[in-house]
Amino acid sequence: KKLFLLPLLAFLPLLAHADPVEINGIYYNLITKSGANVAEVTSNPSKYSGDIVIPSSVEYNGTQYSVIKICDSAFYDCGSLTSITIPNSVTSIGSSAFSGCI
Image 1 (cartoon, rainbow, N blue to C red):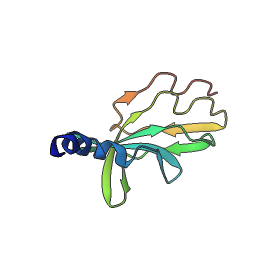
Image 2: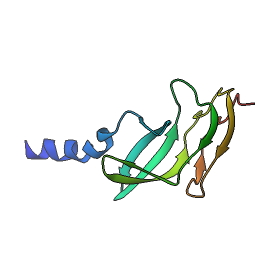
Image 3: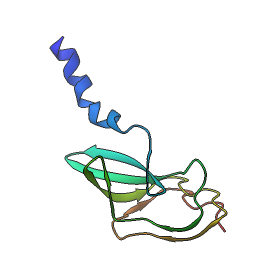
Image 4: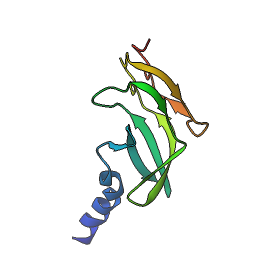
């Protein structure tokens, strides 16, 4: 039984925030790996609009996460998006992240 539970326990941190969370109007995937807490900007089910300022870090349930990535298609077809400010902490922007934006 112990051998079965150990691999299962290893995946618990990945399952803790499997669904995106909304923080101040921006949706994030929150990930803890190799002892680091990181956040990835992901798509908004209602589409982003207006001026968006992505912070370099966010706090969720008392834990601080560094914002390091904009996911594939995160701002896809957000026709009402007027500007976006991206912090230096973001080191990766996925494919088609801004596709369909004017």
